[in-house]
Image (cartoon, rainbow, N blue to C red):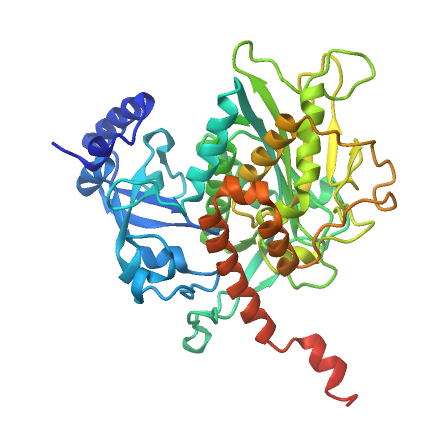
Amino acid sequence: MDHFIERHGLWHADQHRYAAEVERRLASGEVDVVRFAWPDQHGVLRGKTLVADAARGALRNGVNLTSTLLGKDTSHRTVFPVFSAGGGYTVPGLQGGADFNIVPDPTTFRMLPWVPRTGWLLCDAYMADGRVCPFGTRQILQRAVGQLAQQGLEFVAGLEVEFHAFRLDDPSLRLDDAGSPGLPGKPPQVSLLTQGYQYLTELRYDRIEPLMELLRSNLLALDLPLQSMEIEFGPSQLELVFGVMAGVTPADTMVLLRSAIKQICQRHGYHATFMCRPRIPNVMSSGWHLHQSLRRFDDGVNAFMPSEDGNTLSPLGMHYLAGLKQHARGSAALASPTVNGYRRYRPQSLAPDRANWALDNRGAMLRVLGGPGQNASRIENRVGEPAANPYLYLASQLFAGLDGMARKLDPGPSADAPYETPAEPLPRTLSDALAALRADALLVEKLSPVFVDYYCRLKEAEIERFNLEISEWEQREYFDMF
């Protein structure tokens, strides 16, 4: 049969091989339904659930979704005038709420351990005529990984993810708690699992061991490379650390991880959030620290590992580091894409406030670790928030690092006093970050001008809604005084 995927040549050899195994499992009767999941522009998983018989056909034909999904901000409001001429996207084929196709990647197939007899597939976005959807963020990262591969190098990353987990007291599901596009429903009412500020204490860990065991067993059943589970600094704040992964896999892991944790918690009376700075007393902001290096294909050796004593990174690693520093402001909107994320950038807070690097210093934006013989030589970027779209965050790192390598940029000296050493400040608001992205010619070219304009329009719509709200601070500050 002339299937969509075969007609347009969308799979490589490994995907065809994995597809045969998925088909076998669907035919065996062990699977009742399959969730076809697509990471949208915000890194949120959307898609459809098909019964096993229908999933067998969709495996090679994909699943149609309405293109209005591409135009939604984080409140699910459609920002673009989809029923006008051209649909507001400047991309033919998306007007009028037309369909686009999400094509499964068979290499990502998993059985979800927290729900019976349910398979899961991660998908890529394509236009109805087989073209890559220009707004498919997973494919942007695939493109960056491909450019790196042309130099004989592979992207390697480890994830260090902070988040908050609470006891769910009230899910806020009364009739008057409902939301609408542009006005999300009321958030759930929660209470703390820990009081905070007993960092890494065993006693606090033991108090929430039932939740930690739920997460451990389910995440390992997903074959995610979980290494450690930790009590973080603030109230109800946790951290998970994962082993090294290559290529697009770190980003695939992050979108699955966030969705899995939220689902597991919800099913057992908890609420998990990857919001950077929840509005709770004595809160500590959550970050997403991205450890990254490059590995040579020919011998499997870390290309950042230096060969000479006294050096922390190889010359190539230093050029890559300089690229990250050079494009720090332009990439901020991709590493921290929410209004809330910019509450985190403040001095003396274990979060960066300027574009600098330092040797093993957690106050710097770029923490560098390594030395001769140390195959774990790497750069830790501490700028990201855990709500970031991982495909855009990682792609921005690769495009910036590749630019530093191509131009042989010098990162300058280590900022051993990172909150005092003069350096270019990071954007203080999402608006400033979007302006910096638009002004970064390299990132605009690599992401594509069409995508950057689209992404900024989505985020600017969120900012406009935020600016129309009267905050509690304003009410408290001015209502009685004037």
